[in-house]
Amino acid sequence: MGHGHSHGAAGDAEPSSDALAARKRANWLLAAVLVPLGVLTMVAMLLLWPSGSKEGLTLASPYQAAPGVTFDTGRIQSVLQESCSQASTGAEIPQPGQGGQQGSQCTFAMTQPDAGGSPVKVVINPDVAKSHGVKAGDEIRYLNLSRVQAAGTGSPAYVFVDFVRTLPIALLAVVYAVVVIAVARWRGFRALLGLVGAYAVLVSFMLPGLVDGKPPLLVALVGSTAIMIGVLYFAHGFSARTSTALLGTIFGLGITALLAAWATSAANLAGVGDHDAATLVNMSDRISISGIILCGLIISGLGVLNDVTITQSSAVWELYELAPDTTAPKLFSSAMRIGRDHIASTVYTIAFAYAGAALPILIIVMLYDRPLLDTLTSAELSEEVVRTLVGSIGLVLAIPVTTLIAVLVVKATGPRGAAALQGAGTASGTETENADAGRFRELENTPVTAEDYASLDTGELAAVVETRRARREAERRREAEQRAAGLRRQGGKGAGQP
Image 1 (spheres, one colour):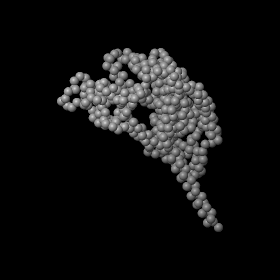
Image 2: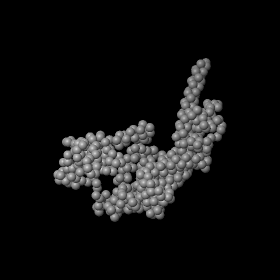
Image 3: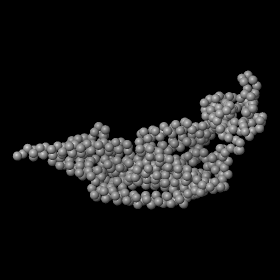
Image 4: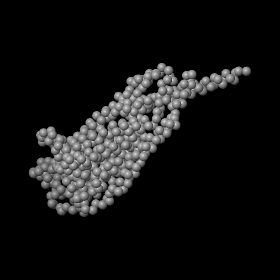
């Protein structure tokens, strides 16, 4: 009797034809929504694709040198404090105790050019010398004016431009990639490739589109949707779970875009006082600073929005795997308990991320000693405040919508795995949950609902699901071995009868 009951439970673990049909209908429904949306996004990208022309732009790039002037690199050998009149290449470097120390003092770096030759004396910008400073061993990039400068003019022949940061940034990028791939394995590698694709969309479509004067709201929405479609499916694979997260992400993206469009106009965000914004305004009449700010408000929330929707979708699936008999309202309620934790943590994430990016501005505004309300609504901080509020609202609203879509889809797929869970619970008699799942009710004949697991995060839910799957597989193997042993015993008895 025991073997027969266990065998029936194990057999019921296979999805029925009705469950497969329901799952197929759910997938077709998701495809009916997402495929036209993907096609519409691609068509919109083609229609909005920028020309790439820079005609009419009046850009004075600091990295474009005049004829005879070059940008060279070298390594600093020593740092000197001397009179600024010693800046010319022909001036003799004064020794301690000698003259030439009168007047304003400048910082010079004796630099060995990477191209070879004698060391040159590079004058360091006063702001760099005061804020960060330079030291022996630093790699710098400097402007070489020696070929076009008349001798004895007293003007600096070599002027500091920037530090060479290629090696440390490259090492940091390699360490980042190694850590991601080591921990997340193949999925982490795909996420990195997806990030490269997202960067390609940003550089080839969104930024040139803004320079071309394309509608900023459309550019931001179309480009962000294309990025999310590529990143989500490439990193997480094609599944109903990923499609659900994508629908929630697009909803949050739409809410964020509408709020950003309203806030940019209502709060009069025009980049006043921003040096970079002033540079863009003077470059071309086609460039809209408010449009660029609008696009930035939308793009800035993509990463966090993607994070909460995919984890919330996964939470619904894991809860359903653990308690497939839970009703849709209870499943939604349990998943939202997890979602509220996501909301709290990600709101902090957005606020602190923007505060860190605007730290120099925060310090300056704090030193002005203005009232708090005036400070938060000032030209210096209003953009960061609006970005935080807009991104947080879109994020918060995306969580219940993603949860609702996930519950509807997962319930439409039928009671997948319910019989297997019941079979694993009854086949072993009085078996209770293993130590790693001891927090949950799993006694024989005790109903288990999603509410029993609502206090867990998605990682813990996934761990319990994997534990149960492994236990079910082990139980099936034991049952198969017992059946095989019973057949062998029956065969032996039959052979021994006359």
